[in-house]
Image 1: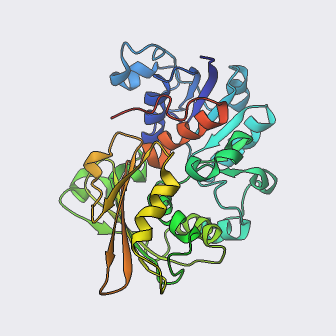
Image 2: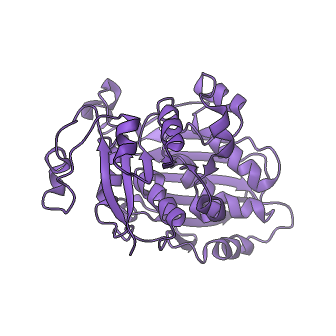
Length: 347
């Protein structure tokens, strides 16, 4: 198998750590660079003892300097950086001939006005934004294969879009009145010091946040609108739950008059019959985070409520793998011509 030289920028956060875990066991990857200002000079296996004795884990973290990253010979770079920071690195790396998979939100929103509305500042690189490809492999494989810059989807959007997109494309659902409630583990907030994320603040408690306009709404509504062929506005309420990882999402949408509820399962099965990481549970089956954490799978179940005429879609995923690093590696496999599952059979 050919090997591609890979860099991970911002490799010491939760997503960065999962990326390293996957890439170190990927047969088609030569990990040549991992950056962290905090841990520069230290070996991966010293910062993350779980990597001890793993081939390649003696690589040392370096500072996040674009020319230095390019000098390593990296052909593809993953950006595991905060939004607003990633764009500058993307520009420098793309200009240096390095293909970029950005796990931040900087290139997910195609309309710069919407980006500014949700992220409170103008988009930092409009020219590069124009060529960014939304990196959901189940729906954008052809575009990913030809891309220089891939915008990997967010964690909440992944759990919402995968169940809804095929049903909207098939015209089975009303586009108004879609309601989504999601719950995420604390790792979704990132690896940082924050009083609200301390153990005693989160344990034995569940709370909503980001109400009524969570930033991921911009991305979710953009992709749902593209699937439906019209503007879509949804109600989305995220919650923080006291677990490390995992997202559980419940989506409710009105079935169109005359639509057959039996078509829900058939449509999902048709859409994902060749999607290795989408597991369809069937009708009246509820997705459970314990079955997907530390994997790249998303589980999807559904139910029809005849009292309300609504479809209930239930999904579960790991927010830092299928919702971040694993999905990025899936896109990397498509980009580089590897088997889509390479490095991702983790259970």
